[in-house]
Image (tube, rainbow, N blue to C red; front, side, top):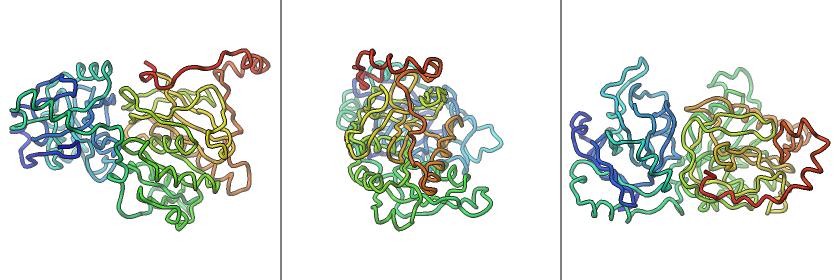
Length: 444
């Protein structure tokens, strides 16, 4: 059985399921015992933890969580139930769900049904009554790893049999998942359907690699018509909608497998079409520019991740969900390994571990961030990025400089650069080379 296979008894009532035994088994042999939550059966995937205290419905319906068993660090889950408005895609994508204290019943005026009923309805195997703090600490100390949730009859197997089942599942490295979660047919999101009065300002082609529903809405609210295209779209598909800009979304899996999307993006960059990418789209831009990617020790997942915009010195609290990152130098502008794209710089950086959180091209109209500015769920600190992309498209349309070089990032902190501009050149010349490896265990 692979991590794509989930054996469930989806007809089990939530009340009966709660009394059934369940067990979480990690690939290193660590076992946590609890009670069934949602459907009963077996779920295999990569165990990760998410630190958001709200927005669990948006979390479980985020396609970036495909093939992952999500541990919610917030202890109380299910209090507000679920509704038809807050889902971020057409279905629940988590492979399994791990919570401490599941609500016995929802209590919110927007609730339409309970979370456990929704998990049963969609065949999602979960476990409740386990120490999610201990699980989180274990994953932080030992890294994310393959795991399995076994409930009902499946939980009656021996510990060795359960561990062997987990070890037989496939790792996240090398997983190609964007095509699995993407749409089959293109669709259009119109500005007039989301409060925009008047003609569309721009039109963009957006590649769905696991896009969240709120992302095209954020564009539409600003007067941008969004043509959402499948992950398998070609440059001919892109040109067919005559876009003013090109966008690549978030999504699951290993960016090292996204060769087709990297090839497509390079064609777009060669034609100087303005580009904006988020999350998986940031990793694809990194690869298109010639940088490598690598797997983080335990990743960034939640709605409270601090990031600095190195152009302004402003700190943003961001929503994130990624287990891979771009391996690019942090010490100011550099020439892209793919030399035809000119200069590039790390525009945003994580304040927790200095992981690359954004890239800005200085000679072509392209930029990206590793986090989720659509804020569903999460803070709205990064909403300005949608406006930045519109400014980039305006520059290309009006014949002005269509890149981000007007705001260069200095290797120093922006505040220091403003305080002593005359000392910048000397300080850079005397600085020792940056030998930091961006891949050092999430820079913990």
